[in-house]
Image (tube, rainbow, N blue to C red; front, side, top):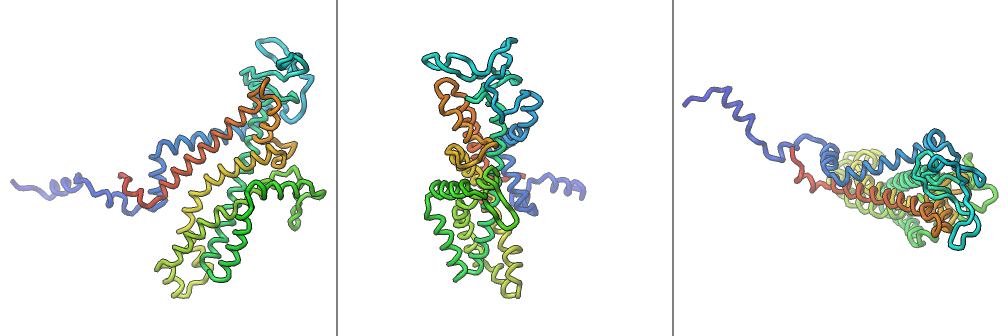
Length: 353
């Protein structure tokens, strides 16, 4: 039976291609995004993280337009609406002995003290959103600064080696030698008690600035990013394409930023969400100890501190920010694992066309 040229071409078009040919020509970043997109658990964590970020940065809208409250001023003599009735925010006869005053508990009404009030009559739900914004700003900012500085230092140390590598690595070892929280507490206490705050050239930071905890946390975690990135740089710098670039007379800056950096950036991308989770936990711990985020700002750690004396009467003051910390850190860790799997070159065997 004769077969025409068109029929033969059509038969070739429907022939399934090998998997290697299907992914050929795609960039590594496109393949990584495809793997991440197909990781349903990681994408669910990303959606949860974006939801928390969106809610936190919508704090002014909630406070001013929905709850109609100022979460940064005391409201001991204020009132609110519960089941259509006006009730005082600070209620008489609270606690086991029915003595003193106890703030109103959760009303579960988004317009009137959804999570109740703290011991100063402030709306806990509004403070929770504002606190999330501060915690996320400090956590993301300190992680970004830490990863950027550690990556640059690791590139310089790993590329030049010798004396440069020894000096930079010993500096990082000195920071590494201190317990994380002890070093953070020491630096925070020194800067917060300084009469003039922190001055860096023309930049002056007061004690209430969010930049203080951001810079402190970024500094203490530099070695934790520097060490794995430097190790990867040392392995890449021995590759043939790096040696060929050096032999052709390429400048040091060109080799570092054009050849080394693209092969190291994936390690930093994997570490970044994990570092955000770590820095958020650190900020919350420091704020709980009153040496992190300072008034008038609020963070999840400061709200937990505000609620520790109300655990038996109004536990939601401390439970709500604790839940937010757990959800945020869990989402970041799951997302970090998904990013790591997506950027793993061995994972390309699981990609389908």
